[in-house]
Length: 217
Ligand SMILES: C[S@@+](CC[C@H](N)C(=O)[O-])C[C@H]1O[C@@H](n2cnc3c(N)ncnc32)[C@H](O)[C@@H]1O
Figure: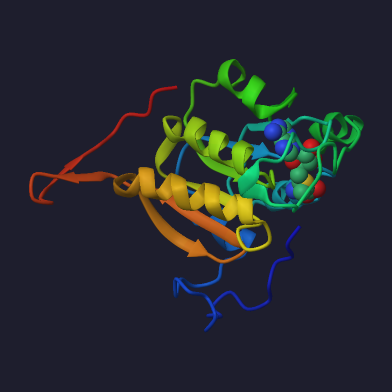
């Protein structure tokens, strides 16, 4: 979990990408004008989602329908890319708080229980694109899987916010691989521990004609 930093304009010299640091509020409020849902992947104890809902309730960010995912069984098996950053079953949290959080905001919250690799495929039934996907899944395979899944559902100028980019080697490797595979479709807004990428509009024909991509849901 990462707290809002007081300075929203600070820059880190050690940030290899030289991208500005971003806090959650800054990232989420940057897409207030983009239509779509909010997806929380890795609900955990709900600390992050509680913070995001408080911004929606005080109208400092756009209120959206929310889709909430967690295994509620903790982490899946680590793979080689994860090293020894977590163990299977770690961060197992009860289901109750996810159900309770539905009563803290007047919007639709859909709770999806299970490993995202099993659930995400058929569970996102919204007729809207995703405006914001926040993921705090910790593992290489779940992060890469989720990024690939949201890719076709993310609104143009929508964002994916990936927590733990610096803390977890699997998350870093997953995001780096995803960006390598999808260079043309994303702009990297921040690559600090909270990484933020934005879905862009392709430039085609010598960069002069912009093709608006209609996401497939
Ligand atoms: C670091 S915790 C998230 C903490 C959360 N952001 C919070 O504010 O409390 C990671 C969560 O991801 C979940 N998780 C990890 N891998 C998953 C997967 N493959 N599918 C679904 N949930 C997963 C774990 O159960 C755990 O609750």
